[in-house]
Length: 115
Image (cartoon, rainbow, N blue to C red):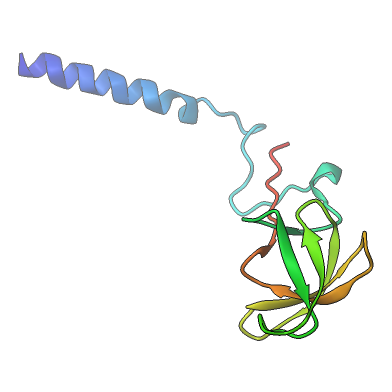
């Protein structure tokens, strides 16, 4: 009975390992190799995440005057960040408003290309 369980476990392990063993050299990239394609390059790497809109402020403080709203769908340019990254100085490309937004909602977007 014990031998049957061992044989069954070995068969399952072999079946799971089969795709890794059968990969050809043409399909496998060298370790550490980076393959880039034209579809991987994005123009605006920063995006608003976690909310539909962020208040644009005149200074890097939640108590400063609001000068506009940066919506998730708007594209924007990041000019600089505070040392801690808690505030980001941006220009909203749609409205032209420039100011500070909370770094809590602005992230660098990372793309993974599998082609």
